[in-house]
Image (cartoon, rainbow, N blue to C red):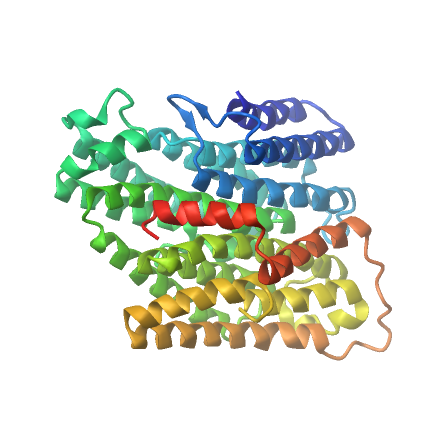
Length: 478
């Protein structure tokens, strides 16, 4: 019942918010839904409530990990949205009436991705995230936002169509295998049937799913929607797109990967994941160097980091653990960075990095937090991403030394690319007439909490989280 409520509550409240004219009441519904959602997720961690409502809903530890990331980040985005919507000082063309309903439906769709192991329903849920989030990208009614929205819809539609073909191919591979049982297309049934599946159909299914869901995840070469979408979407939406939506597509790929593992013939899947991961990091590095839009810079950083996750899973062993841990770290870092970019945009009125100077002097808290998160996402100690990237580097060195060298070289280029853009923004000279800007509490508390979270994960691993990551990694052959 809890799993159904996790999906139903935001979906129903979204419909209710659609007919409420008061923005303040809508925001109250948004905050209420976020708090209830996170409370139910905490109950799932404590084991007080059940995690299975067969046949469509079934939550395993991997789904619980990604559900937790989504819930935490959504609460942070909801808190940040309050001043963002009530005080849209940087743009007077915003349309807040549809903002809250679409946010709630977005949460419902992302939740459904995590709590179902029925791969057909999983496909529908991933498609639902696109439909719910597309109006959010067009929050500002301007030409660039409209272009980004259509690009998002078209490219992701191509990807989701390929993922649908992959789902069909997997169904063909499973048809006629008696061990699939009555559950049909659930992950458990497919895992049982995997050893008897025809390999050509299974391999084709994984390739199509990897390319299809990889489009939504931001893996190259079908990543091109991501920079435009992030640069035009409101900052809390960008935080959710980067920190939560990409994880949903990652989880969908991992479900297909689990079937390949169960078949006993999954080396091709590992090689493909690692290959696309390296290509994605390389493409991100090429565009991060000399990037002049700081929101697009963070978008290319997301492409880099999903590439790191793909490489981790592809390398296997302890790197699978590191990939899942990196998903946590990336969500916290990138959510905080996009929130802080909203603060900068509100004060400077532009996303052009060359026009932003002296953030630390004009906005001390925002500047310090952005500096910390820049070093965190760059893999500097003592933050969480340092450990996840270090474990993946060690696994790459064990696979082949040149692979480890290539991995660290690409990460170094990405770090320098971000530094060349962010450091002048943060430390550059401020015009003499520019006064220190008052920073609203909610716009600071949410990125502060996320920064503290990624710092804590760098110095202390909570036992319950470590155990869950180990269990989930074992499901990926780690």
